[in-house]
Length: 159
Image (cartoon, rainbow, N blue to C red; front, side):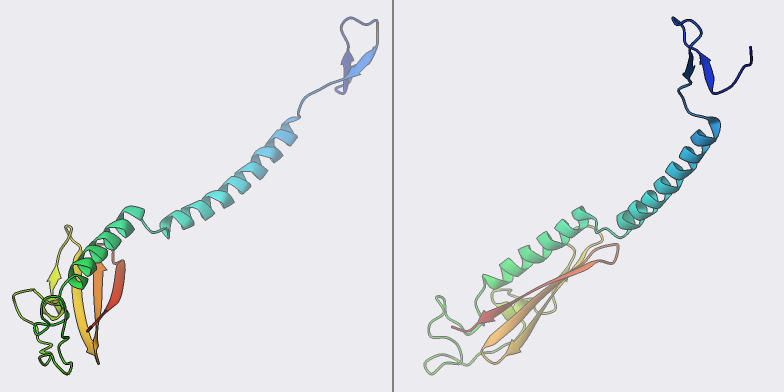
């Protein structure tokens, strides 16, 4: 009786030949090569996206530090010459002239111009105040240890 690799005797039948089921060694090797190529391509995309992704903890710290300082400065008076309550506004007909000077008492917006501090270890926070007509542009910049920076700006009006 001739033997072949494609057919074997089916147990339970008398002499009937049944096709073999399974995977050949060549098919298995081709499958492994295709899967490894696809896996390598997917991993390279994943590694690149993970490398360029902003660390969420750093981003939250930057935003917290900038927002906290901006809120603190915005809550202050417009100028040293502005009375409590804001009326009459400095520089108006009935008000005192605006000084727009940086002082050490930290009781108005101008006093924070150029102030630098470290809200967290290795973080740097800087405030700048620019006078534009009857408003002041307050910009808070925060730099993280890895070089990321965040800037928040707001206008404080004289009213």
